[in-house]
Length: 272
Image 1 (spheres, rainbow, N blue to C red):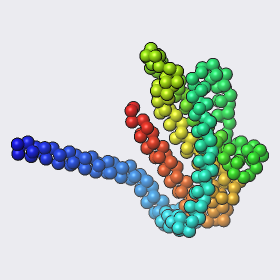
Image 2 (cartoon, one colour; image 1 turned 30 degrees about the horizontal axis):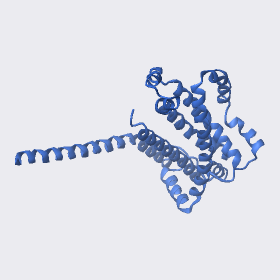
Image 3 (cartoon, rainbow, N blue to C red; image 1 turned 135 degrees about the vertical axis):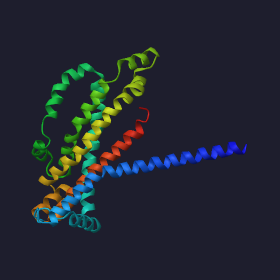
Image 4 (tube, one colour; image 1 turned 180 degrees about the horizontal axis):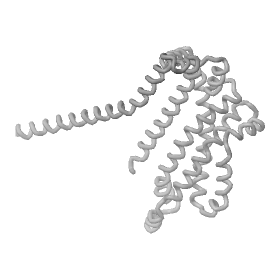
């Protein structure tokens, strides 16, 4: 009996050690992935400090990061981040609300796709920023034009990936569901939507990045607040460390948004 108990304790300890070892390996792997970024930042610091590149044009990274935290503490950065995120989320949310249902409908009915696809391709190839003057003409230079330009920048990737996701559903799955007496709504909910979901998520990831990039460009061309305005304003005033701090902020937001969507995808698609 005691031997059995000792074996059980040993197995539990081995299991714990394995979990700890796995976590350590994962941490080391993640640190290795960051090595390239660390080397890049060190090179940035050295070339600026050594005068290889004029520090007026490229301040040392340490100066930029110090400025970043100063702007963060003063609230200057937070205020502009909040403004930009509100605009991005509004346009992005509108794009999701329209593109996903529309994509599900178009992907489910081939005749509709046949007639509407050329128009979609035409709209998709039209540069988003080229349409900014049009949006400003119709909606003015206020918030609506910013939301509209973000919407236009995100809808195509979401819509086309949704259509492709629906079209990519295995016909045998639909036939099997029909043979078991499933209704059209049940087939759509249990077969089509789960199968199309990975493709939809891909469209959302691409569009989330586009939403931020398009908005930044729009804010640089016509806004009095937001990260794009901050970037343009600091460049005009020759506040170079602040300019780089704004650029770093944009990069960090893009990375965070991407990781949030990836985490959401992994959580939702555990069944894969």
